[in-house]
Image (cartoon, rainbow, N blue to C red; front, side, top):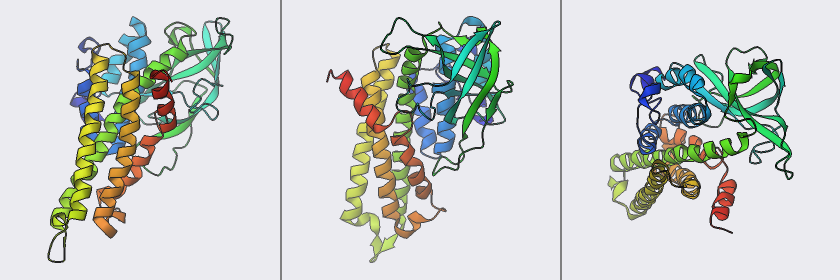
Length: 344
């Protein structure tokens, strides 16, 4: 992370005035894609930091919050995290149980989050959490008033649990969080009180572009490894890349990757053009997650027995791929988002 920060990659889409790279969403997607061609754990650390941890401060924070946090986040001095998922609020993200009550100029937070990325490292700086701050009389269908609040690492009453033992992304920090009589200043509220639900839906849309770029990058990395192995592995007197069965797999992977890449870039360009990108981002996320799993599986198959051995990157790629159909909204949630956007 320190090296990525020195290269200016930890704050690509944020203004230079706040220490960012002054780039756009497409530049950010390209960086994520290239990192994931090699290591998904590094990529998701940057991705969650940028799309989920830093974006809420930039989009919804006041000037004081931006000046306080963005330079440290964009430089990579501190990692950002986003606390949305809870035991009872995964795909049903609005079913937040964590509560924050106002008391003597502070928010007093009680609750728990799970599957949170970047919250427990030595350089973790903050987590932006969703919490119920009251009742919303404007929305009788859902009486919860949800707000986003910054909680700084080291705050009394905020604890990070032990990291999960995961199938993949093993160099990425993922753990549960607990808040017990955790007190933060009222000024840590991000944007208007009660705007949290709308805010996190927008953040998830942005995050899907990053995760979709990860899907393309992992698929491309799997193809890179499979092609290189097929060209140097010989069977029946010639490289296996000369057999039509292997060529068919490589050709299909290459074609699908190019199509998926264009979909991701389209979503990024729509966001940069300030057009509605909800539909395209969901389509890109759905397409690339499934493609990453398929390409990783084919790469393992092409490697044969060696693909099942940890010494070969495709083994790790295979383990890393599956979460891309779950995290940042499951495939089923993406289908729901897409259908609604189509007017179904």
